[in-house]
Length: 323
Length: 246
Ligand SMILES: Cc1cc2nc3c(=O)[nH]c(=O)nc-3n(C[C@H](O)[C@H](O)[C@H](O)COP(=O)(O)OP(=O)(O)OC[C@H]3O[C@@H](n4cnc5c(N)ncnc54)[C@H](O)[C@@H]3O)c2cc1C
Image (cartoon, rainbow over all chains, first blue to last red; front, top):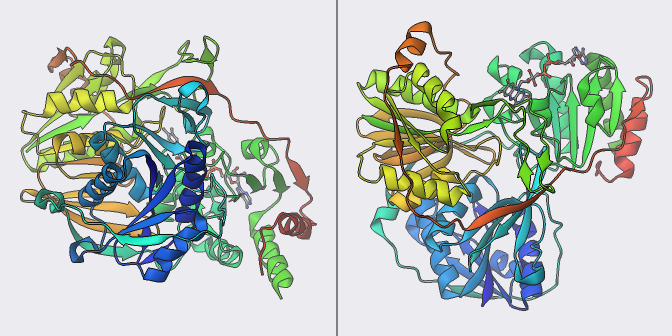
């Protein structure tokens, strides 16, 4: 038996969400009294692979073929499922990232395994059961999902588990998988990077603005504040509908769900559909000129005032602090 | 071109979420159901593509007769025919298995789902279907166009997007940006009444997971208001909580 964890890389580098997934999986492996095997696909330097030991991996499997340099959903899920079978894994863990969301269901079907996606807790294994919590009804409720199959697949919500360094060592091994030509039908034509900005789903801090900002020309101060805080930029739906900002930044029930440590909402009223996508943020700060804006009801800190005065003051205060 | 759009019937976005039976069942009392917003844009895009390519759009729902009004709305928006697999869904695996069993020998070029349903929020059915039918899947799709027998899809990735070329058949879960919502017109509503709605009996499938309990999220303590003349206080508070690193 073992626990297998898949660690994504971006251009050869592991990300924080990968270490979160490792730390989470390590705790599960400890609960089950078994080994943690980490799998990496693509071109990653040996030292980086070895470093996974420091987050709890006992063994690291690596697959690095020419045709796996970029992400191919079907081929990657086939490899992960094969590695799970070879290592006799009873639990397979991934990140609930955009990529993980595409992989986990395919892996679950291949392994005839139940899937808990967006997991926000460790499994409760009391009485021989296996129960994991996740957010449902757009974070208006939490479900306790019991997985009833022999093998379990878990996709961990970003920012839901703390990274723990164990100081451990891992051995690195090549993993030979059987390629299947039909797994390579999808061709990547182009990868468009939205510059070097902080990516929204992984962000620890999000600065978000709404229709209160009046027009796209006023987002300069939002971007400046975000850059100072190392934050990602987000917006409400009407803002992206009006093409003031790209759809990728739209958060809420019909946009991206975020759960950063800090969410700063500026000129957003706090409609139920907006809150649904941000309510699992740890701290919420609201800046709105209307003291009765519903967003204040779910905020930790609030300032009633004009964004056009307050945001430049915030920027100045952060700058003063940093210098 | 044959397109299948899988739709779910979900509580309206303003629904107050409560539970019954010792917090084991969602309380459907007084709840208004709507076509899942993500499925609605999948359908809108499917109708646009079918118009350009002289194709057909079939909408499919796994569930009971309560969803027939939602299926009729989908027909009014422009689907050619509707199918309801008459079963109470237990988990995403169950739903995907039912759809796969139906779609298997129908020759669909493209199967669309919403990226997630706004009730259980799994992004699962599209990729599960892809696996069951052994065809490519894209779980979060921002754009779909067609070039001959190939779909050109934009997939959302952290910090950007990927443009993919995928030969028919494939499955795609649609997100905002794929199409604008379509409001049915009078002609659509009239013709929806006479379009076929086929009810199919389910296959035998065992779910692999189940929800055993619900809980409400911890409510926040009330907001601490900071005066607009003391913005620095907010920064101090955030710094004391470790948010402002140098
Ligand atoms: C099916 C459905 C799905 C939806 N999904 C989403 C979703 O995913 N995400 C989403 O965001 N919305 C969603 N909505 C829309 C949602 O209901 C609201 O309409 C939307 O969130 C409002 O955006 P807003 O707060 O930016 O704009 P408004 O509601 O117009 O609020 C603007 C706010 O700015 C404040 N303001 C104005 N001027 C200033 C100033 N100078 N300084 C400070 N504050 C100022 C105002 O007091 C007001 O509170 C959805 C709606 C439906 C029906």
